[in-house]
Amino acid sequence: MYQNLYTMAIIETTSRKFRERQKDFFDLADNGERILIRRGSKQAYVLTPVSNDDLYFSKEVVERVKEAQQEVKQGKYVSFDTADDLDRYIQSL
Image 1 (cartoon, rainbow, N blue to C red):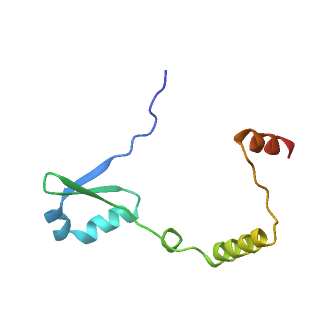
Image 2: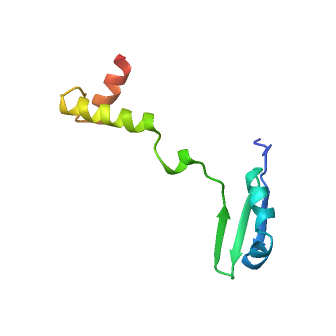
């Protein structure tokens, strides 16, 4: 039988309490807590920290995409007509 070994608690607050104690809620989110902010009875938001990697492609990723585009222009790619063709190719590697 499956046992749920990890249950993540969610801290729930109202938009009014959030405005009054923003710093506290940001600190909690920075420490890995999940914050749910309710706005009235019909709308809710989750406060989640993001990093630059979440918002933008790194220089390395942009460079790799450019390289891949150039490879396609040069015909350096493999295409498949069916999923079976793809499966056979992967098995051959």
